Length: 419
Length: 84
Image 1: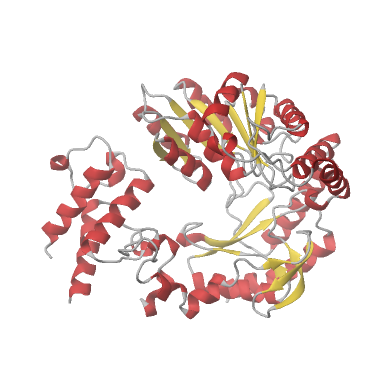
Image 2: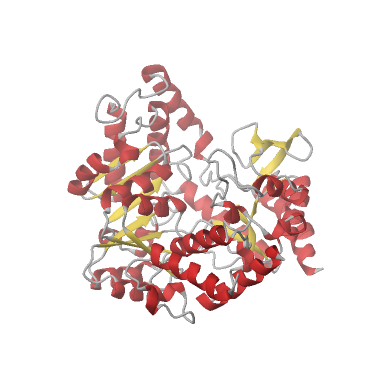
């Protein structure tokens, strides 16, 4: 194990072979404490000392001291987490309602704010009704748990988020995974599932690759096989489409999507999730979606801030126009450096390094030393042959900031890959 | 441990983790995917088998394995290593 530490990953210790439940696997501690693994792990959980703006302050793990960084990792795509109007709305709600909702939604946790925000979101997504969740992960888990039962089939794109998989597991439905964005693979799964109740799950923008679901082809198949559809627009809501309603709007297929899911932690700049669909199924979910009915309602100041974020992002297209201009600029700069950006078509831009974990970690240490906060994404989060960095573009980036970042990326990654 | 014994453990765990499958009809030249397994089912089969055989093969060495036979060969390699 000692000399092969880097060939192991967290995926290898999922099954705990220790006889005692409260003891991790016998070789887990030896692995996690190995100097090479420690060197890789020290990138994770670094502390932010300021808001996650384009320029932020982080407690640097190597130096153990605060330092200013260019932040290209936070999901603050539209900069709304620290928008002055959002902060003011949250402050006002904090004064009026206090910190927490102090109850689950059915008993005492539903405030006028929750009702109003859910109504506005349903209207925004052009669905009949909407449920708010305190956690984005909880929203996906809860929707799957509430919609599916043993005997049903959940067919997911193989790159779907863990929350959809966990929800599927909890539901008891049989889960099948189709090759990423591959309609013929999906069709084979649909053929196998004939005669069963089927739900197809996919993402608007895939979070590690930045490519879009091939919705027109997938929906055609779904309709042919009479399967329901679930679209996770975590990384696309408020950004894609003429009105920012997401990738479904971008493709002009909104009315054909059965369930539209989104999170509040990305472009909205807060935390939580929401599920929009027809009124009858949303009503049904209230009884069977535990992360909704057995969890405290979202914090009122957060909801007030989110409602303001929705208003700001939809009153005109300023923020998303800026986001797309920044994405185009950065993308061009990266392509000029001959970097592999995979199939990205969005503000999520991977820089694919390849199979070498050591190279990935070496580059990560160097760019962070130079003041660019870009995190390594390693196996098993992504396939072992395509370890990467992932840029989250923000409307807050300035040209100067992007130029400085491109210089660091050129010096460390582009030159490092060449030689 | 013989290769037959290893194959028996793999087959037993395939039957335990994949729906609608008859152990007697498993063809080692096929992949678990051919029997309707998803990636989580395969992790379950691989992990429970390794636990039973008391071996630990890194996942990174399993990525190129295409069928049940190759999985048994890989386990055999490690069983010999760890016992010898």
